[in-house]
Image (cartoon, rainbow, N blue to C red; front, top):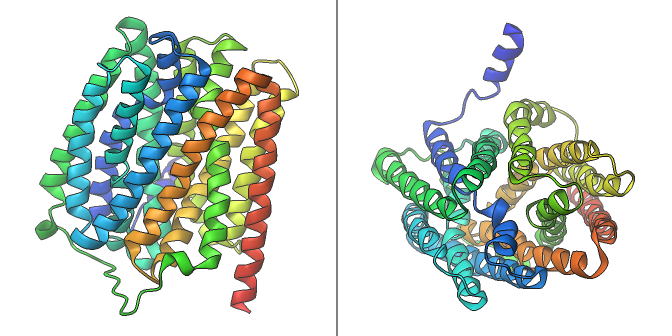
Length: 401
């Protein structure tokens, strides 16, 4: 047992002090974002919106994310990642608190668009910061550490969120979200001021290539959009499936979603370190992750046994553990060809586009055709994602020959 623990600890060695601080800031921030997994439930139960209304609000969520990611990338290249991160975290905290006071469809649509616009300015800035604070050989593990912080926060967040909803109300979630964003801002200002931080990989490109002319990168982005649409069903349609079909309570839903974060915290770093040292390519590993995630939906239609929810969550979790770190690392490696903010903004935007179409399409399909047909359609999208990643794998192989 001691050997296993030591081996686990060794997978974290070599990462910079700044990366650890970024992970702590991300942990504080993510632990508070407990509104997001319960958003579809909040809108249908507390505000009594229809599934179609919720679908359009989730589209606003995605549109705000697209604009915010694009703007964050532009500002990061112009004024630097630090200023963008501070502004984004502080303003997001204020906006989350105000969001609870919006109760009509139109005002909430505008509110969630504004929150996501400001919140997702943080993402490209954080990726560029992460790249700057990491040695080239440590970038995938640095990304994995940030994901561990996200998922450790996420494993606690939904469980705590379920308790808050049960004992208090949904309104308390908005206050916690806002306050934790502000706390994360204070930590960022205190420990990651440019004068206190050491850049380990300062990438300067004399004649940067535009990300918009990188065809291989756009094949990759197309696959990420599809993967995002599939993955995001776990945060909009899936909680409704748990409640309406399997009759789970909010607390049980929070615990099931929290299991995802706990497993990632326990297994992702050793898994990534092992896979980094294997013969598998980044594109091949992303492909395998997409296969596992697609299977997590397909099996839901095979049985009505409640235990299949746990099996589905396990498949999705391991698919996510493999696909996301290596997609992040792939994007950062391509970003060395041009303006990092532009590349990482497009990477973030691919998931924002998934937010626009994924939540809305999933909720409309559930309302019109039921959960079973929705899961079959989601599986087909996963197959298309795998196909694009296969093309990417072949093109990367040709480029290396």
